[in-house]
Length: 212
Length: 427
Image 1 (cartoon, chains in turn yellow, orange):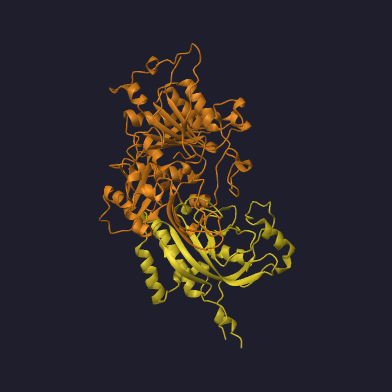
Image 2 (image 1 turned 90 degrees about the vertical axis):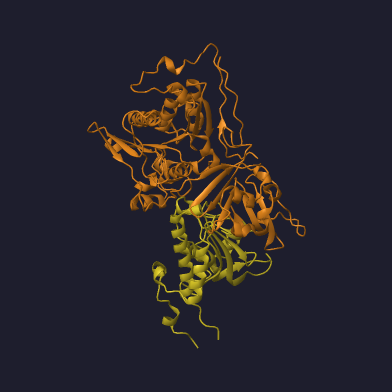
């Protein structure tokens, strides 16, 4: 049995997240997070808008699930992202592609005005060890999204970049490239297995087919 | 603790037989000024942000005024083309701008304490701003302007911004009094186009697209072309505005912009109002000195000292340059409680007892501004026991209120973490 395509495509896109009406549960979680939003007024407005975008994403797609959100000093979020996640627990065994990643997103107040290095936003808590050229092969599993990301970049854009990095639709395999090769061994491995790239071509805003 | 990101004083190398003449030898009798001008200038502590084509002239003028202390901030080095617009000559090519300008200032005025910071303005320690009386700015990018404006607002320091628009032979001198945090700031004048340029990381640098010292991926417009005289004119006018502000000469210059156009030889003065939609934090830090050493105080003590104990909005702590590491990870465990303040220069960190691998802080659980809820049961422990023994300042924030608490042992230091230097000997 297949799901009709139109049922899997949400009515909204990333440019219209502010129009998404949240279901009561998400609305109450958003209000709860808003109550702890700190900092000067301009920053608070920005953080609240970014936070609402996250809840709107959770509303319209099952790609994103928000486990924790703290707005007290910047935006910190623990997010479950449905995406192919390449892992290589043992170099002598085949690649394992997990279906979900648990990532920590840190959006510091200075992001609003200052361009930030691409490794300063996202790290993976689960699964381990992630086998990507632009993900550090250490305990923190930091993901590099590029040399420098523009000031004021939106959280939804960061998530889109993370999804692209996990699906390997955007990938840097040259270890000498300044665009963020944090794991040269993985870059070498993927160069030898380039036929497996990308891991998925599924658009970011599709819903998963129901499990039957 | 002494962070590498600290201003450092330059030492004067006295020249045999040279005596620096006193300012009074050339000081004009200013009309309607009764103040002791040399004394006012000797007591003045000035920070110059950006020591390029305009900033180097600013620094030298200040040295000739024999101000008491001068802090120069710029991360860049001189290029061969710098000789076309800078006060320094070709021999200085390749050297740090702050060092070249600092040395020249010391030669001009050995009695001025000259300190330099070869980094970006964002990297200046927060308490540095308390050690200066006025800030002069001549930078090449919007992000630095916003940061400088923001810090001057927070610390209540007057800011004079000197800029040139060479295509129109135009110089602009903005004078932000920051008498209270409700006045204008550099970002108040930004429009959508300016924010877009900032978002795209555009620098208006003399080095233009060939800037190898810029951040990777940073865009620059073609190099700013200017004349030496135009840059010097901007510096001259900025120093004039500084003297007018300091000595209250003529009409008040606070919160005004002075524009001089070389095409028409006309100058225009306009007010600099606050933009209600400004994205900056228009709030002033309250300043307090801790009743005892900060290392002996607990976060809860600091909240009380800041007068924020009854605040009904979430409180956050910034403890010097320390970061609070809530949790880390190692090779065998994905999350390990750490719960300690860690210095940016910390060379040692905890090692996992099982896998013997260094515990790495997890970015999601590492905080520069620590919410009180995250500190939890550690709120009542002295900072020393939490890893922040030698801390110079703490910033306690609750909503729009923020209090900068200084360590009593460091409150009188010339610059963060330093003792006041001995007067320089002049031969």
